[in-house]
Image (cartoon, rainbow, N blue to C red):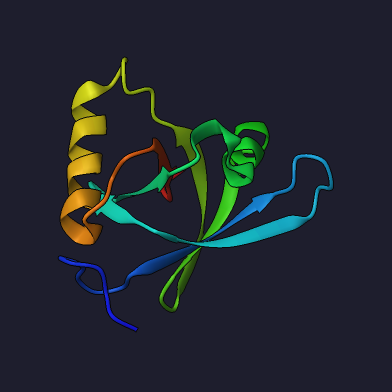
Length: 111
């Protein structure tokens, strides 16, 4: 499988959220970038994405990148309140994958 233009290293992150209705773990495979020790995801379908709806209800998530697995706190980045962060993270996604349009989600493994 060919990597998207500009990708380096690990291409996918595995995010496990807790189902907002079922309470069951839900895992997705998704593109990601890193900045300042945090991970950034872009939800193409914005708030309609089930994984985004799940993390809004239960922000404690599990993350797996390569062989490394860890808990993290997830949040939707408010692009109006944090425009610099939103622009920087979207630029990283555009550089790595050639795409970065959508709702930005931050995963903080330190919390």
